[in-house]
Image (cartoon, rainbow, N blue to C red):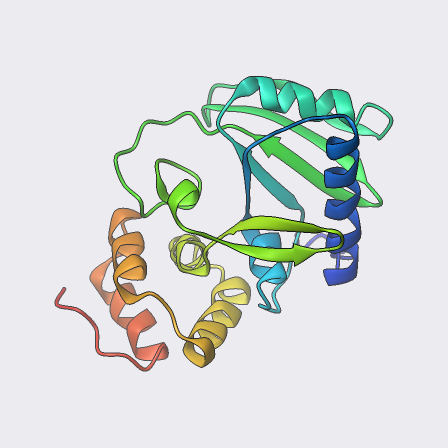
Length: 200
């Protein structure tokens, strides 16, 4: 996102997601989803750069329903299968914000990943968004993702937030291990969180 464009702020994310969910509700679309990515962190009170809204679903037909409900908005990527990432994916622009919905169809027997396996479906919190309550993936899973990607502008705010507000230690430890974070980086995270690192 370092291409000079203006990043959406909390008010933009809230307005866009509230619009999408209101339209989906009016259309009678009963979709089980999780909000992931940086927008999930922003709605949980973490001040970090956000590029778009990421909605995860388990079924391809939910992505199609999403596309049909948003047919009046600019379609940036029509619903289709992306083999490289094993995703059925669509992207629309709503109130100036990119909103994406996808499946992630990689089998993975772990609860430590942000968008693969059991993690996002088991580890989430409900957050307010306009007139809706949204199931947002827990920050521990997002932090592990950002540490793996080595995006300091994302993981530093997450570390500060979790240091101030606490975290689920066992979940973060599993997430960092399951996402393949080297022991040195795991120690870095625990040091920043002012906690004793579990044995490497």
